[in-house]
Image (tube, rainbow, N blue to C red; front, side):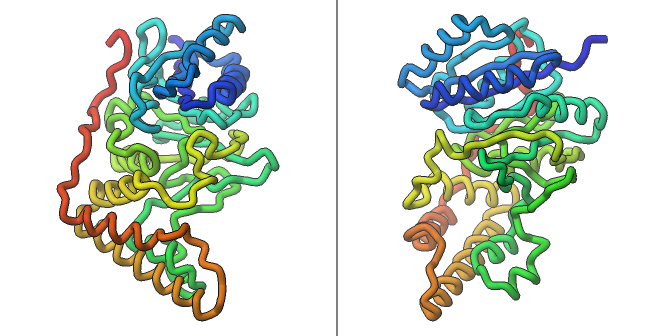
Length: 330
């Protein structure tokens, strides 16, 4: 019986050189493992596709190809292009490994994920220990958002945060442990599970798409795992420009509202927003009274209120999530 195969997907958007470096790190980490790498150019329109395709040929990279998405539908849609492409022989992989274009797996990082999924059939997805270039761990392990996490995350008041600590979304994990969901910088998912629950929901342009997918996986009865021995260096936010935000972009508010409305209903989404606005307003008032700096982005609460109150009176429209994937040759 042939060993299970991995399809590694690296999504590029206008960071061709960085993406090639990430893909090269993945090539090293894939040595001795069956499978391939597909680099998806997410409609960069800056020569990225041509640059990367030429490099793969000139460098003689085997088991690696570059394809185009045809449109920039966001993180989930771009990765879906790679998943649907399948393996170059028209076959279907056993595992899909999602790697950010600014993430660099250590030589054994992919094997740790692969070996775990091979050994523990109840695990639907597994993710890595993510750290910056300075070795400081990034927060990439989380609980599912809820109305109470919206209050806890916005009020920033010790006594209330202590009461609601079990609802706090970020989890600071140093050891291998089950998780609700993981950031998609380095995550391996069973293809069988994707066939069962569907791919990324392409209604999300950016943010909350991993949360939604992991929720569907867990609702189907599979577990998510954080594997501390799978180590990946992550620069973070290179292609999104998140560190340069002066205002939170509309697509973040779109994704947040859609996640709550899709998974819990519009009334729940409205309650989540009201609690977030209440907590944020109380935090803002406390900062004013104590002359402390308010940490939220400018106009964040005002923008959330305007966005979500408008969304309450609009129909929630999402693109259909495929029940089964369609890979090459099938």
